[in-house]
Amino acid sequence: MPLETRVLEMMGTVITLSIEHSEAQLLLEHAQKMLEDFQQRFSANQEDSELMKVNAQAGIKPVKVPTDLFNLIKKGHDMGISSHSKLNIAIGPLIKLWHIGFNDARVPTAQEIEEKLTLVRLEDIELNETDQTVFLRQKGMEIDLGALAKGYFADQLKNYFQTKGVQSGIIDLGGNVLTIGESTKNPEGVWQIGIQNPMKERGNLVAVIKSKDQSVVTSGIYERVLKSGEKKYHHIFDSVTGYPVDNDIASLTIVSDQSLDGEFWTTILFHESPGKALNWLNQMPQIEGLVISRTNELFVSDKLKPHVVLLE
Image (cartoon, rainbow, N blue to C red; front, side, top):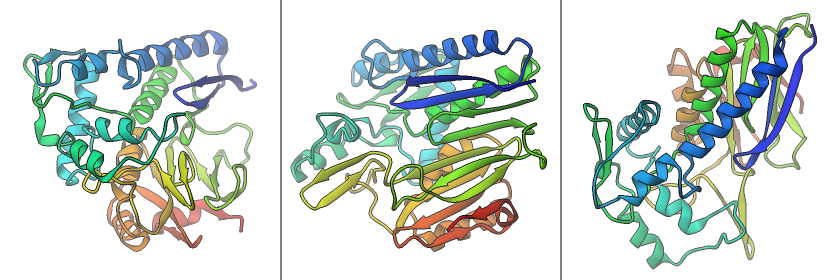
């Protein structure tokens, strides 16, 4: 049975869904509607989304939200607190100030950044599990789920496909790849996920990860960039300084069972040095990864090494 594929342009990226199933086109149609629904409800860039209803009431009153949105906000909040705000879903005001990846992107003044930093405190997100309400205590606060949403969406799509009997497939949400079962096109049964060389144009791979029923999430300083004079600013922010994270990591790939975990850890570990990130990866039993430094050195966690093919 051939792989049936659907390619979509949404969420600021190219999405590719490929599955093997006798009713593949029907399932892909439903998956597309799921993504459209997620985008409409979870977006920080659409004024009428369910998330933006929370942001619009910042400093005014709590807002009741659907269970799935509440749970994702809570996971992001809790992970952010435990990571000392390396992952910070309250970062919305800072993201919109810089707006990297959009036509109106610019380098803000130091004063503008300082003003926004007062609004990115995770402690000012008040969650009521009983009522399922979210309250942002300061006016001007905004939740942005961009660091988590694609991972959550990918996990939901995989769950949907599997409940419908899909045993082989691949979900690619632009740098966020989730495989279902084995690849029937590969004698080893593995999916081969290419890792972009962050120092070269898109399409130049530095490695291939062999994946089977796993998530492969990559974040890099090359994905969305603002050029100002001789300086480049990437889109991964430090909510303490208000500027893009400034260290030696150019690209970070996390391999895990759940795509949401990959989103968490690419964001959190991007704040570390390549060596420290590797140490973390070697200590976590269910998370593996590959780090590329700005000098193009590769660091691969111990358990991932047998599943990585280096191309350069």
